[in-house]
Image (cartoon, rainbow, N blue to C red):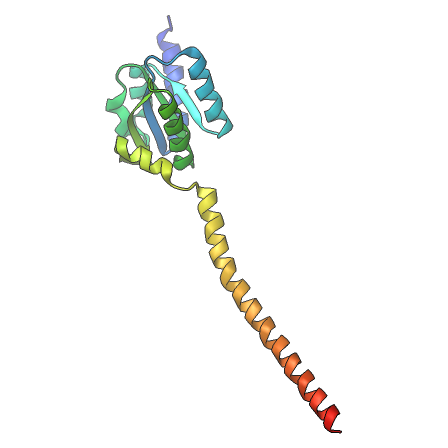
Amino acid sequence: MKTREQKQKDISILKEEFGSTSNALVVNFQGLTVEKDCELRRQLRQANLSYRVVKNTIGRMAVEGTALEPLKDHFIGMTAIAYSENDPVGLAKVLSKFAKENNQMTFKAGVVEGRVIKVKDIVELASLPSKEELISKLMFVLNSQAQRIAVALNGVSRNLAVVVNEVAKQKGAEG
């Protein structure tokens, strides 16, 4: 059994981790086998996401004073928290996919960018494109306009060269 000092140390470590994030999902993992839990942890690690199984009282104390404080009342029963500093969509995607494959895991609550979201919104969040996909789409749209201008300008000079060449041929045929 942990001493009060060890528990305070755990709370301070969690508070520090939670202080640097504003995206988290609280899940119930009751009935999940150790093998499936290890698989989930592996998937989250590959996506650079964090996952902790926490004792409810320690979890409640650790979220106090952080952006995750609205989750305080959801630390009931078998509780784990998955969190990410900057990728709420990736977090929702990994957990939603895993939850579909494993009926034992259910969502309790979520916070995205410091705002509480409903459980049904987690599935909608998972269906959004990732931040990288959105940036690449935006860059494509921005680049396509510049590319069209370059093609149009290139076409003007090409057409001018063709006209000059035709005029030269006509002058050469006349002369």
